[in-house]
Amino acid sequence: MRLHIDEISETVRMVQAENLDVRTVTLGIDLHSCVDAQIETLCQNITGKIRYYAKDLKKIADQVAKEYGIPIINKRIAITPIAEIIGKASPEGIVKVARAIDAVAKEVDVDFIGGFSALIHKNLTHADYNWLKALPQVLCQTERICASASIGSTRSGIYMDAIYDLSEAILQMAEMSKDQDSLACAKFVVFCNPVEDNPFMAGAFHGAGEGEVSLSVGVSGPGVVYNALKRHPHADLNEIYDIIKKTSFKITRAGEMIGREVAARLDVPFNIIDLSLAPTNAQNDSVADILEEIGLESVGTHGTIAALAMMNDAVKKGGAMASNAIGGLSGAFIPVSEDNGMIAGIEAGALTLDKLEGMTAVCSVGLDMIAIEGTATADQIAGIIADEAAIGMINRKTTAVRVIPVIGKKVGEMAEFGGLLGRAPIISVKPFSSKRLFERGGRIPAPFQGMTN
Image (tube, rainbow, N blue to C red; front, side, top):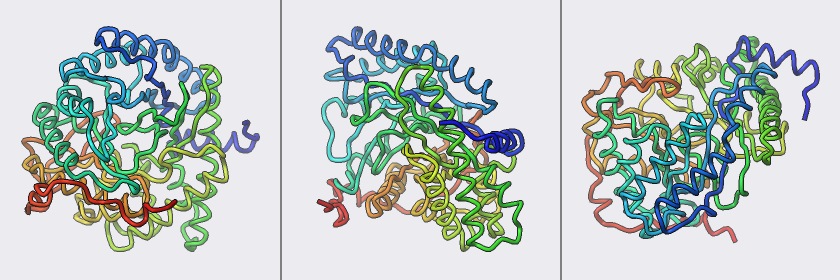
């Protein structure tokens, strides 16, 4: 695919003035061929395969970014969910595998490697149990590994026991990394209805339906959309919708061009483009700013969900017109710590945890990069996850929770995570328990919506 000359000049403007970038090129690698009963051999097989496919990823991505003038911010890897290939490995053995993967990620110089994950939306295998025991240590002893868990789907219902176990693991991670504002929790996300081709962290993994290796790309364009709206201050909502749709079309075209070029030079298949509007801490590169430009005094006020629903749908339609390779999550992310407008909304008192939860019913994913008080209990965290999973299950969409109980900090204080992860004000949780809900045990059955055959 090639851009026309007028598209190229417009893309240059979007890069230079409006923070357009390719947020990530993510190389997906299948690890099923690496399985071995001996931990040392398993580690060697995994690191050898990752090294073989990813050794030139950063170099080629940087070359393409320089030649085309479009920044590629992150180079990442997604692997087969690790619980599928560890066999009878003990928790100690699983930690060894994690250290080996982290080491090869540093060697090939990728920013993150996702897929230290387990799909446990119906029950746990012995491997899943050992993965769960090892998880806090893995995320606290490695730098670049990201992990996720699937605890529900529209077809299977919600596995409540797993939610509670994972909430206890989140608290362990928070305590073990409290000297870094509980940073380990920022590398872990809990899903309902996860997708197999998501290029974004922390939830990326290379699904069973994917091939041996492939390259996916995630674009980022809140600043471009915001500036496009600024140029039309008197447009009505139909015109606003059309502006967002057309802008999303342009962003998708540019992002796919970059992704396909990187894939071609790596000699791997191009997979999908995820056109999610992913904010950064740069000025005016915020989903909240877009919503406020549409007409809200502050993100979180009444009307926020309506504006977000309109924006998200327009983004999807624009992307679908631009490419036949749309995949991943595709829509709008609302990660609090990575969006200055969201942070401002919380500080102003307009944006609360409840409102964020309501917003997830109409946007791409879920509760993302939200810092909560470190005194939160396992059942409170489990309740947050279960509520979000229910939204995903009933609405047949992907939802997720990445919350960070920041040990030692109080509501209103600021947690600092650094880099792309940014910073976030500590939000309060409801001071009531849902422990009895989880003590009952079992699963919430699949809803009627799951009977689609």
